[in-house]
Length: 405
Image (tube, rainbow, N blue to C red; front, side, top):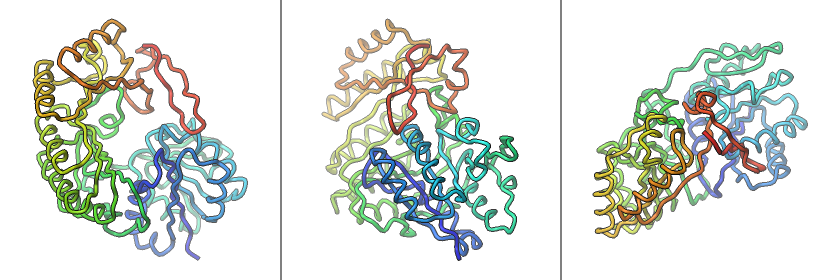
């Protein structure tokens, strides 16, 4: 009998396409051995779902292998589910992946459960190799690159797996119809990577500066598919939307889909900080098509000392002032993002930065609490930077808010 694999996503949002699960399944099914010996299912819940209900569904699925996508907002919930799942199915195999758990096997794995492993890095290649090895008569997961696992009470991490530099290796889970249900929201990824190494962020730290792209033809087809499917909200997951020239053309296609089908009706993206004029043109295109859109301007801090501490450069303040003036003149909605507190920032410098923004005519300022993210440069230098945190009181997430640097 084929082994059954259940891919589990615990999201903040309802009716969101489980894109990570789709990528993993689409890539794994390219392998003939894996495809012939496994059946795949995808389960999605919000983090507000009760543990009992989630476990009931997981057990009802009666799978041989469960794969959990772990992020800041859901990892405490995942940790609470695993013992309950193992109580019902003690011999099942479990694999964890995602930015919160990778390279942290010492926190998320225990010697008594050798059937739980952890993926370090991109999931597609490692997950496929993991499934394939489990088909062997005597599986040896130490042969699978990109894993952390316990063997004989010793935590072992296998060799790193190389990043996928040709993203066309990954079949589109949209265009191969892996999401037959009805959804309101999707994550859309057109490239992976970030050329910057901002200390608070995982994007650049994870990808060694290299940005690799899905083909434009594929993205255009995916956008058309999602529009026809009636997906209303696109969350563009690229680190710097507007950085590439083609981003404007891709945006124009989204706008045309909106004019034809009223979907998408809302788009969110993280804007390229070095291409503000192109980002403004992108926002104008979407605004004219009727998409609910606001231009994000991600400054994070205006303190020169802080920017040096986190290895970041912003657009010049004169350029920012001119950008804000043009946005206001064109009646384009925008918001400016800050993070508090960053290393090198003081209460005085933070207030001074807000005052500077107000003088430029900014209409909306969003000051995010600084969350300490695993695997970021600041996380690795937390002792040197004097980082102190407090945990957020959450039943689902493992957020640590920085209160002192």
